[in-house]
Image (cartoon, rainbow, N blue to C red; front, top):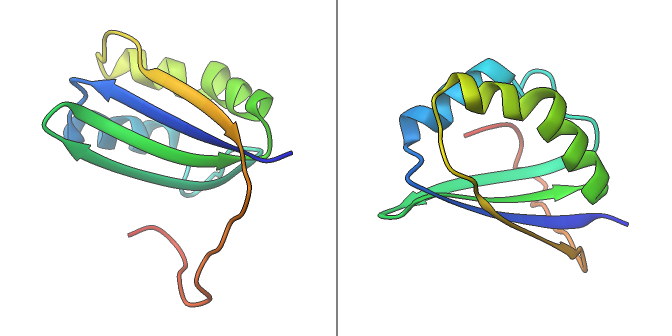
Length: 99
């Protein structure tokens, strides 16, 4: 069953996020099981909402690809992460790619 992953990581900057994104290259080499990724920032730091095939798929991506890039980018601390079963997903027909 697909899950929604919500993450809040206090103190992470847009520059750090971009460094991790470039290192992991998930837009060109998508993560197995990753379906949707949305990220934004506020005064506290990074917020992410993802849809994954399963919580285990996210865990594998984290261990194999994301964690090494986070460490290399010098990001410290740990995010607040929660998972919930996906009830419904809608993507507008004309929405594609990263922007």
